[in-house]
Figure 1 (cartoon, rainbow, N blue to C red):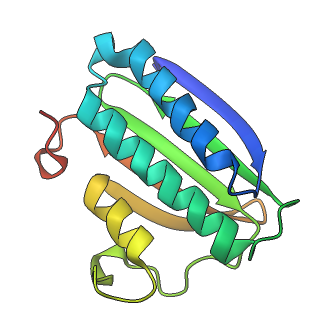
Figure 2 (cartoon, rainbow, N blue to C red; figure 1 turned 45 degrees about the vertical axis):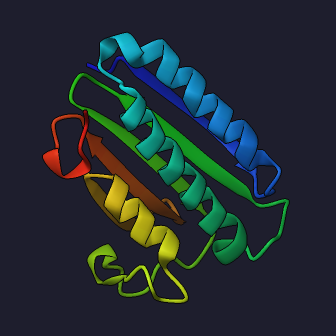
Length: 143
């Protein structure tokens, strides 16, 4: 059973990134009593910003009228963030192979470091970056 679920779409405009940060912070404040600690809020917020940034600049190549679909679900164990765009997706996706020193892929590297699990999939004609944050995952350090 989810404690929180929300889906919405935003235009592929860099000016929307700050409002997304504010939105995730507000959701985090509402859910903090349910174990959604500040560190989790930071990891999820930073991952959302990186994923939307990738959609704006790489998938949509700066075309501001394209839509980015965002879905966020939280239960007692996990938070699942999904960002969908009209791009071609990530060829040979493996976030474990991306280095912090590579010229491209730093956003995916950051997301992979902050989230418990990351997948790149196609569904319903769109590319989806699905990011899972497990509140009990020691790798993402939830203190």
